[in-house]
Image (cartoon, rainbow, N blue to C red; front, side, top):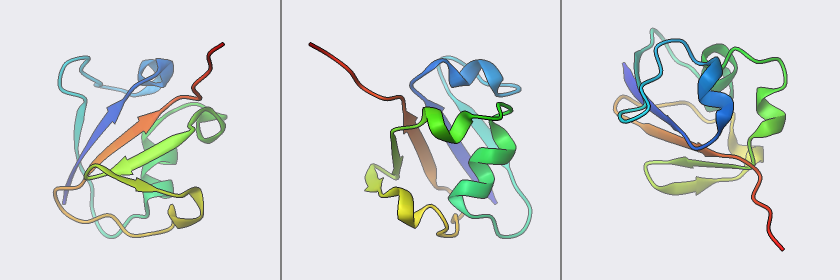
Length: 85
């Protein structure tokens, strides 16, 4: 199954083969949850703590639903914490 990952933070520096313009198109075998996919793809031990928002196919996914299974063709977007003042 193919999944596309787009990262809007410096976590992209920890993803092997990440393309700044296109993100990462990854072929994965078997069933994976969103959380498993992110943990395996982003090679940073605190990566999950650095994510504030996840969208799948442009729909917001609450953190308590990251155990949902990915589907072929899903586009996963992750965003860093947002601050301002």
